[in-house]
Length: 249
Image (cartoon, rainbow, N blue to C red):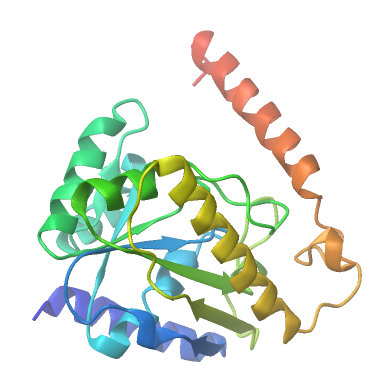
């Protein structure tokens, strides 16, 4: 029993209802009822993590998400994140958060990660970091792929948030658990291919109006292509590094 987590979930469900969000969840039978597992989630918006926890409730479980340290430093969100036993990630000292995640996995927890590391501006599956695979291999647990589609319509990078009553449909698909194997690079490639296939399946049954900012260029939308988005990310990272080196924050 986790009264705080249960309360937060109750509040979230109320907010979803007020927003009129319409969830379609498939494949939740693939969530392990017991034991540790890496929950790998695609990243298209800031609210992804609140939706990614829905499928695991079918077996009454909770996800411990890895989230940037700044969220834990906030005086409001910090105490909540710690009470929910999420895992802080310090980008300058990632080894500590990695060890904490592996320890939780060995204890039988579900640990949520974003293999893409950052929000995909193209809404396609970006290149993956190998952390999810390495955790699964070291802890000896499976990776459960989870793909969400429609979350970018609620709140995503570079666009106004739409947190009112929008009646937005959000589709979630859970894939079959992938048993860990080495090398980590091959496991990472398999995970990415699996999540691309799951995403394509969700998109087949979703309406994509032409020209919309949240629709991938491949489907007739105005979102940047994956290559264009990668270039924007690289430019942003370079600018951030320059500011840091000059002491501008």
